[in-house]
Image (tube, rainbow, N blue to C red):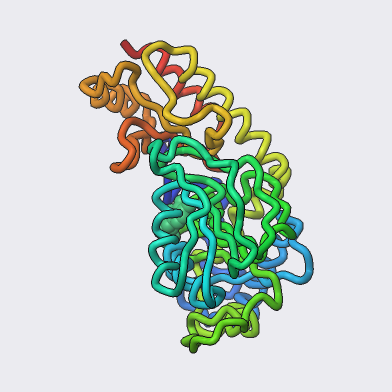
Amino acid sequence: MTQVHNFSAGPSILAQEAFDKAIEAVRNFAGTGLSILEISHRSKEFEQVMDDARAIIKTLLHIPDDYDILFLQGGASTQFYMIPHNLLERKAAYLNTGVWASGAIKEAKLYGQVDVVASAADKNFSFIPKSYSIPLDADYFHCTSNNTIYGTQMKSFPDSPVPMVCDMSSDIFSRPVEVSKFSLIYAGAQKNMGPAGVTLVIAKKGIFGKVSRPIPTMLDYRVHADKGSMYNTPPVFPILVSLYNLLWVKESGGVAAMHQRAEERAALLYGEVDKNPLFRGTCEVEDRSNMNACFVLAGDHTELEAKFLSACKEAKISGIKGHRSAGGFRASMYNALPLESVQALVNVMQTFN
Ligand SMILES: *Cc1c(COP(=O)(O)O)cnc(C)c1O
């Protein structure tokens, strides 16, 4: 197989071991002689996968005992409305740091009053707002840890006076998280955890049951918690492959090691962006994401963009084109991306003219 340097923003690179084990499980899952794709989700072999997946997530993130770990469907986008459906009685506070945060705000407005405590929209989401106050009478405060599209990342989280909810879709498992600061954390798997099709939710026990509206069964977190994410058929294959990918994270030293690797990749790439006169970073330096690095051609020589993209293609670099709403380039550097891939990109930047 020719090696491609995969900088895709999502679905994105996973550990090679995860692919190899997934192929085997499609052929013969856990020695059953059946494929993971045809075996019952109630089989003891799959029940074991669910237990192992919860256990490894709990270990990797040091999740306290009073949190439920759920595997849901519908992507992070479903969480945008499932959260207010379950938690917003009167008013919620949101931090607007990008396209995904704006999407979450739009959905929350269907349920009640939304106070946007701060927004980076006026500067094209190129920074993380830091001075804002969270109203004490909000039902919860929602933030987005990593702005996948514009390339900013919250390096620290506020001490919220109300329950804090966080969309960690694009940087979960890339750095240690103080889970006890949050009431609910969610992440679509396909950025840094596994394949598309499963959404991880980590929710503090006892936070639900306080809204007066009726909650359809499938939208009720308490049902999924009570049933161990088996109220209906869970997304068996994405959960299994996520488990395999997280086993690789654990064997590679856990999230502390992932954080170190992320810092090294980011230092290498941003170092080149900053010293190479042909390129320019688009975000405030202190808020730049370790996961998604956004940059443009200096002097806005957009006519050279196609040329740079084809130089990347030549070097087997994939997924560098910026998101349609941000333009330029975006290098997504998730857990499984080796430093050598970043070096390959830096080499192209250095020889580009
Ligand atoms: C990709 C992404 C989403 C959307 O995830 P889906 O699983 O496609 O719904 C939401 N939030 C962030 C931060 C993302 O990066």
